[in-house]
Image (tube, rainbow, N blue to C red; front, top):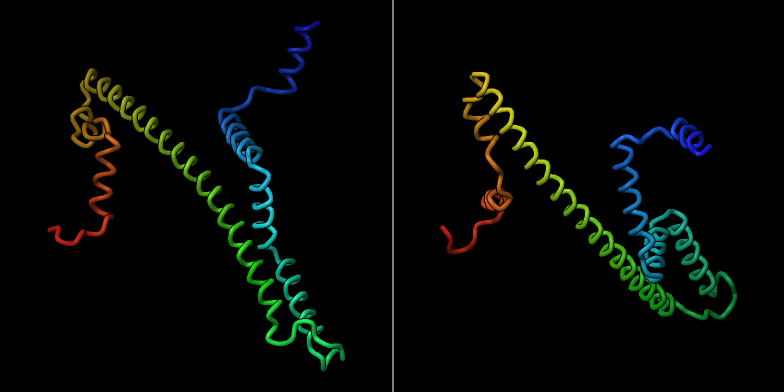
Length: 185
């Protein structure tokens, strides 16, 4: 009975491809990262997302328009509670701006940390891939040499089959991208 269930499950759920497994793993890591946020981080992310939506712009335009209209005695006939130049409105908007910027920075810092983690993962995978590719080139070069093929003697292939040192690459990149320092020749 159990073997029939396993057989039936294998028919309905075929084995996943490597790509699908990788995608599921990345989604699981992202979900875990989102779930591990503190309550304040969740609120900050929500505010950061909602503040960038069109409805927020419209709501602020309405709020400012109504506030200004209510404080114009010529429009309402009432005594203004915040007469021109609207110091109370200015204070409220300034405080809102300060808190909005703080929430945006908090959200951006978290996103930057997440991007740094992804970049580190990319670097590790790229270094591993480089090492594997170098080893495969060395094996192919040995096979070509064993069979007497001329490509085994190609200097470009020999250079590509050498182990790549990450520190050497970083030094070379810095040599070409860092601005020259004063006093250096």
